[in-house]
Structure formats: C-alpha cells, structure tokens
Image (cartoon, rainbow, N blue to C red; front, side, top):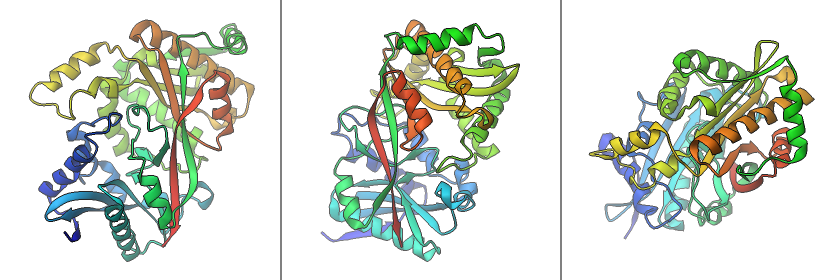
Length: 382
C-alpha cells in the first residue's frame, strides 16, 4: 500500500497522533505509557505555553488509511535569540515526537519535517526535541534495557540506524547517571559534608510547599543564573513556570527539594522527584474511570525504587569554587538519606547532564555513580 504523509488538522487528528505511540510501543517492556491527557496537552496550542514562542506542524503517516508514523516539525523563537556558542541562533528548526513502524516511514516523515522547516525559512535542523529543550530532548542511543525515569524519553533502538544515514551528525550527548543510594558515599564526600555542617555560614533547608509559588520563583531565579551560559539554555517564561508548577506540584515533596543558603542568601538548589513512571506503569496512560484515584493514593506518600534528580544549580559567582561542590554534596547527601528513610528508594538517577559539563560529571562520578543512559542531539544543514 502506498504511504501518505499528511498534516494533522483538528482535535481528532491530535488524538490519533497521541494514540499511535501506545500502539507502536505496546510490545516494548521498557516503554512507560505517559498519561494520555498530558501527551495531548503537550501538542495543543492554548494549553502548552511553549506555543506562545514557538510554531509547530504535526504530521501523520498512513498506509491504507491506517496510521503508521508521526512527527512534529517546529521551531522556537527563544532558541533563535540565543547565541551560537550555546547552540542557538536564527534559522534553526527542530523535529521530534518521532514514531515509525519501519525505516521507509521514518525517512518519509523526516523528509516532510525538513521540507516544512525549509518553507518556514529554516536553514538547519537540530533534532530530536520533543518539543522543548526542557521536555524530552535527544534520541536514546544507550540504555534501552531499562525503563526511563519520569520526564525522560525512551525510543525504539532501531531509530538511530534510520536517522544517521540521512545526514544527521551528533552534536551533543546528554547523560544520566545511576547510583546506589542505600550505601554511604565515599569517605571523602562524608568529610566534605561534615565540614559544611560545621560551617555556621551554610544552611541547607527544605522547601516550604505552603509557599509554593514563592519557592518556585526562587528556584527559577537560581536556575536562570546557574544555567544561563550552558549549551541549549532557553529562558523559561512566566507562563511556562505556572504551567510546569501546576503539573509538578503533586510530586513536590519538601524533603526532596533543598535550597542552600550562604550568609542567609539562597545560592543553590537541588530538585528530586520520586519516579512517577513506577507509579504509572500499570495505568496504560489512562486516568479514568478509576486510575486517577489509584494515582492520587500512591502519591500521598509514594514508595518507589528510584529517585530522579532533574535539576541542580549553583549561582554563577560560586561556580568552579570548592564551596559550590560542598553545597552540592551536602544537598545530595541530605536528600539521599530522606529518600531511603521516607520513600524506600534504593537508587537514584541524576540527569540529564551535558557531556562537556565537567563540573557536574565530576560530582556524579565522585559519589560512585555511572552513566546508564545517553541521549543524542543531532544536527543537519537544510
């Protein structure tokens, strides 16, 4: 049967676009079905504030009227405003949310996304991004043998071999690190933590969820300062802060998010989430009719195997100092203790971390963690 690629138009098509991922990944034991309502919100302008500064076109591939593939072509005007040395600049487009039943479908979808980007004046493509750098960037190229943690992607291992022959070259690897949190950290780390505990200038505190909006703004201000020179950094807008905060509030626990203060000034933070994927794996992405109650019950005091550290930051004026490393080790140790004692966790996952972020990689390796997944971002001239 001939292959047809057509643009997604309307609510019914967006539902087909979302549902296809569940169909094509149903036999992969390591794919975790996301909540359908959130997968639909991700691609719906007016609900996801990403589209306030981005433009997107979704495409479906069909054979005999049956969906066999999908892709998003999009570009982010905030990315265009970032300097070239951070991966930004005008003319950069993206594609993502790729799902395909075979190589022919994947090749046709990528060609269609590239043509749409050319028609919009883009001169190069950086992919995959599904859809923002803050969501699920990169293609999983190592670590297919175990499920992803919350808000990390999982891809068919065949995709790498379908994408690279199309002229795509890897430009940046994003790493996640796995560690056993039931064991004490090495003696060196314990000495660093003990030294910080004797320093009256340092205070490591839990966040106060009763002041959620205020604490979110504080963490964002540290994040924007700490990450502003990083490759791939794009500022988070106020609307995105509110949207993300609403989504993540159910998995915010005060003892899992720490703020470090020096002389009373907040200068660093570490954010940790229970692995929501463990709590959702048996829900098939559906909240109704009864799964919403199951999920709410599980979130009251989650017991999980894994904790994920998605974000950590130290203000720029302290970066590359011994104090910055000390604050990081103290926050990691305090959250490690509470993760084991209060949530029954046995492992942690840190990331993603840029492959050339030597400071964060050094911290991860000092606490005896190891790379367990690699996500690759590719580039191609159009």
